[in-house]
Structure formats: structure tokens, C-alpha cells
Image 1 (cartoon, rainbow, N blue to C red):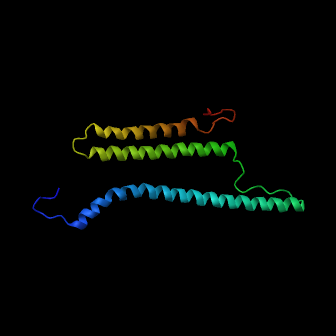
Image 2: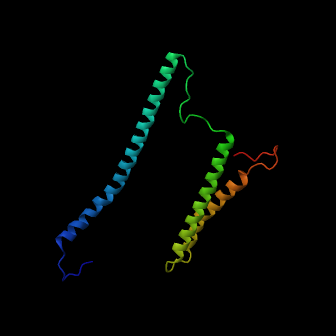
Image 3: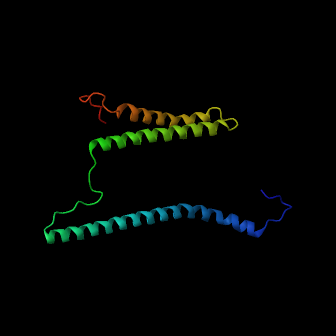
Length: 150
């Protein structure tokens, strides 16, 4: 608050009047940038698909076998399962780190003796994800032994 005996600088007051507009422009700019990114990705995927169709058309005209579309091969179930396991492990480790950071950050605040325990929420979610990735997605030890499917 400005002391009554001090005169306010008009340029400073004008800057404070622009704060709501700037606060509104940040989310709009983020949405516009993400929309532009999605449009560019979809455009290049469409161009790749058009090139593949042109290649298939030429192959059919010449009687050559049809080439497979790049990136369309389906991975084996083992590869899918390993990616899921790694996703759970990485997600668990990230949540544990976030939980530790929130707990440490809230512990340093004055009078926040109970608030710091909110950091345990993402931390315990991370422990659960890590346990899921390490226990339920473990590799079978015996060739006939199958890990449970989710």
C-alpha cells in the first residue's frame, strides 16, 4: 500500500492495470502454442501417410509386394509388457521424488507442522506404482510360470 504522503507514479499504476490482461494472456498463449504443435504433428503424419499411399499405388501398378507402413508394426507382447513395467517404475520414482520435495518444502515453513504430511500423498502413490512395476510385472522365473495380467 502506498503511503498517503507519497505520490504514485502514473507509469507504475498503468503497469498494475495491465496485470489482469497479462495473467489472461499466459494461458491463451500456452493453448495457442500447444494447438500449433498438435497441428504441425498431425500435418506431418498426414504427409507421411500420403507418401506411403503413393508408394503402395506404384507398387501395385508394377506388381511388386506392398511395403509395410513405417511405424505400423505391432510390438510383441513381451515388449509391451516391458514398456508398461518401465512406465510404472519411472512413474513411481517420479512421484516419490515429488512427495519428498513437497514434504521437505512444507517442512521448512513456519507453523506448517501438519501441512507437510500432504507430501506423503504423491510419495505413497509413487511407492504403490513402484511396487506394482516391480512385483506384478516381474519376469516369470520358471518357463511355465506366468506373472498375473492386469
